[in-house]
Length: 274
Ligand SMILES: Nc1nc(=O)c2c([nH]1)NC[C@@H]1CN(c3ccc(C(=O)N[C@@H](CCC(=O)O)C(=O)O)cc3)CN21
Ligand SMILES: O=c1ccn([C@H]2C[C@H](O)[C@@H](COP(=O)(O)O)O2)c(=O)[nH]1
Image (tube, rainbow, N blue to C red; front, side, top):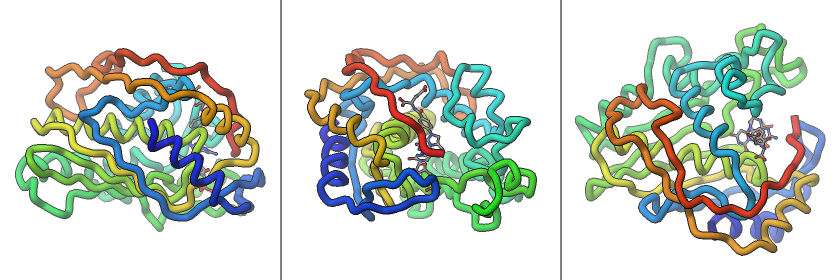
C-alpha cells in the first residue's frame, strides 16, 4: 500500500498545525488524491493489522439503511459507540441518506444499480450522503442533535460517483475530512469493497477506486503510530473473495466475504478523538 504510505509522508512533511473540533489538534493538508487498481488485489493496509470485520459489518449496515448501532454492537463492532445517544441512534447519517435521501423515499443505491445496468455511459451515477438540512449544531451534544432530528456527525465520506469503461467499474469518493491513522484505512477498504460488490451485481469487471480528500489530517496523538508504520516494509496485498452467487446488492451477508493471503504487521493502537 505505497499509496497510503505516500499520503502519510505528505501530511507529515507538508502538513500545518491546525486546531480542530475535538481539541486534539492535527497536522493537516487540503486536497489529495490516491488511486487503487482493484484488479491488483484488495487495498487493505498491511503496515498494521486492520480489523476488516468492523469494515464489512459497517458497510452492510450502511446498505441496510440502518442508523442505530444495535446491529454493530450485536456483531461486536464498537467504532460508532462514542457518537450514539442512549438508544443507540446516530440520527440521519450515511445509511439513511443512501437509502432514503432526506426522508423523501429516494433510494440512491437502487438508482445507481439500475443506471449502471441500463445506462452505463451516464455521467450522473452519484450518491450523496451530504444533506445540509441535517447538519448538527456543534454547540450542543451529539445526543441533543439526534433528538432534534440532526445527524450526530456530518458525513466524512460525503459523496461518490461510479464510472464504466471497457466493461470495468470505477468509483471515486470525495472525503471532506479524513483521519489518516484510524479512519482512512477503513474508508479505503470499505469503498473498495463496495465497488467490487456493485461490479459483481452489475456483471462488470473491477476498475479503479479513486480516493479524493479535502482536509486530510494526522491527529497529534497519532504521530508515533504513523512513524512506526513508515518504518515497516509494506507486504503483498491480500485478495478478497466474494460469493459469486449474490446478484442483488442488498442480499450480501458477512459470510459472503473471505479475505485470503493477508499477512499484515501487528496492530497498532491509537486513541480516537471524539
Ligand atoms: N476522530 C475520528 N476518526 C474517525 O476515523 C472517525 C470518527 N472520528 N468518527 C466517526 C467514525 C468512526 N470511525 C472509526 C472509529 C474508531 C476506529 C478505531 O478505533 N479503530 C481501531 C479499532 C478497530 C476495531 O476495533 O474494529 C483501529 O485500530 O483501527 C476506526 C474508525 C471512523 N470515524
Ligand atoms: O469515515 C470516517 C469518518 C470520520 N473520519 C474522521 C475525520 C475527522 O477526523 C473526524 C470527523 O470530524 P469532523 O470535525 O466532522 O471533520 O472523523 C474519517 O476519517 N473517516
